[in-house]
Image 1 (cartoon, one colour):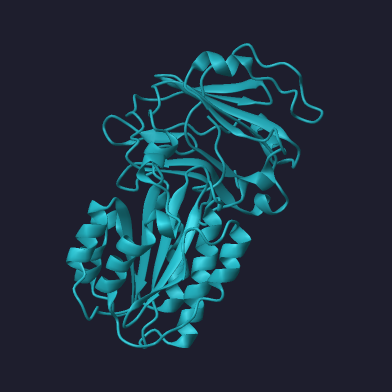
Image 2 (image 1 turned 180 degrees about the vertical axis):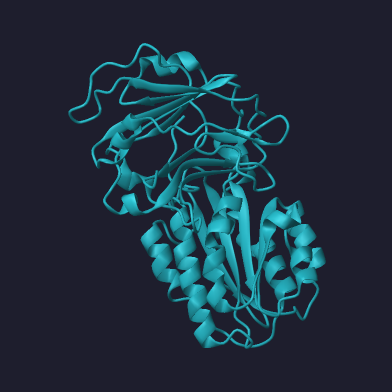
Length: 372
């Protein structure tokens, strides 16, 4: 199983429903345009991948562009920068109904249910709707649409709760003003990446994680997660190695062996972790570095989120592809521990050719830090 950054290994029919009423204002709407353009970078946009549409609304909803219109990320970002501002009243309920009945249709570019493509809508509003939102939101959910509600300023919490999909806490966001909407991008990205999508069968108690990469100059100044798995409540399930124990306390193994410092020399390295029932082992360049004991831990909960490449201090995703070898740089999870024994280091420039004979299984979540 291989991964790429962010939500790019899961495909969606994704619709932005944008409030363009008079209370928003032209200056603030420019911030919304930029927010949409930034957020779509999380997805692998394409005709057979993630398709994106935009609905803008005030007195009535209007299609800015539908799901079948643009085929590349660049096209979508350019179109987002040109979304027109309307002004007028706030008819959020009508906009939700319009999206369900006119946008998530095959005629408008949505894929048929038989394809198994997730339907996701992100609604952004800054105030009280002048029509009812509950019934349209229920109808959207019945149609299989996962609806996120983003409220700004005076947007009513009660109304956002009526709009948002279940569980409400995972699908509802509120910020004080338009300057703050960019701060929730990371949180929204994480909510979109469900672990059950990237790990549909879950993971066994013991398994392996292997990747080949190198740190860039800038990465020495930052802490970032290479791979992070959350449970459905947003709690990280594994960190450096750190997991949830049977008593709900943290189960942690921190590797401080001197050889770990080699990771930060800006050369290529293959790193691996294996987790057994009572220990965690670190492998670097096909060499066993250290094995540390751990307490019993809970299983990974697939009802949560999986994040590939995320900065520690602000949750902004990093482009892991910049750190990996073209065609060979990959992140692999082995559900069968024996598979990791077949790993070699011949893909590392100037590295060793054979794998350590002690390779077995690797585990979930690794925090990469150059600060010791």
